[in-house]
Length: 409
Image (cartoon, rainbow, N blue to C red):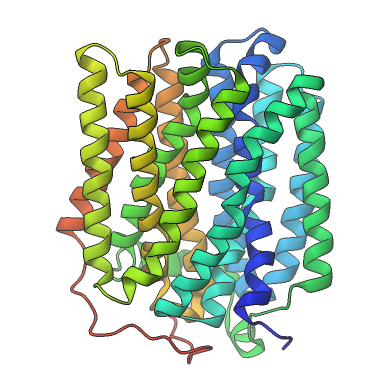
């Protein structure tokens, strides 16, 4: 096996994971322009974002088990090719239906790199060491939400919205070359030989009833759903409702992304001092309390721009602490089927996100409350699961590199 040091591999996995944020966040400042260009409503544009989320969800369910059997790199190659095709197809869209269809294909392709990132981490590490690598990945692809809206705003200032997808196609090509040149195969031969994709349904069924897996995934799914509600509604709330320019909205989005990156880097440090369950519970309380208070202020008479921006910053930062810790804990016991487990983790997250973005789009009424209420509901749900369903803390988390593989369920 080639060198798989975390310093070498984190930027590669971050670049793969960045395709999702780039495909979402470059799109956000252009959503009002896309609605005008295709002569459709804001809800229909939000549905095209929902179809991208659906592609991300469904693709992961297939990529994970297949990668357990044939290795990580062939699956990444296939996904990146599909991502490039979806990008080019989106350029040709002339109706809302065509755009949603191509965005679905776009999501199918983009999901490969995202699910493979966590699977590759689990191939190499567990415990706090894995959390450090996940946090490093988040630092790398966390740059994407900062740069992407600004880049999207710059592109639509000088070119039609279709140029966004041309840029995404180029990013896909760049990742394809990077993987070919620099990414090693981390799935061990003996584990590939023992893995059969047809066992995926049995493994998924086992994971869905496992208390070592499902509660952590549920908290990440609800947290992610609230974040996707923010993604689906924030451009219209800030641009159409509060009158920000696309560039100013991108700046607000970038500040939130910086908060996300900074908070994510605290997760491994906190895991060295507190039980993971304690950290997650404290974070989801902050998430839920802030969102509920914001919903109350909005209902009482409308939150100001400053109140909205500050509250969303706190919510997004709290979510950033939850995600790496819960992801690592969910995969901790499933090294032998890490691709399958990572796929289900990602699929449930994006399934919840797809539903939340659908609700925001379906209830869009020109006000901020549909978005804020969805975020608040997701935060409360995450709190309930974290306090009611987490298993008892383990005495210690493994920090060994390349541990013995766990037994398949």
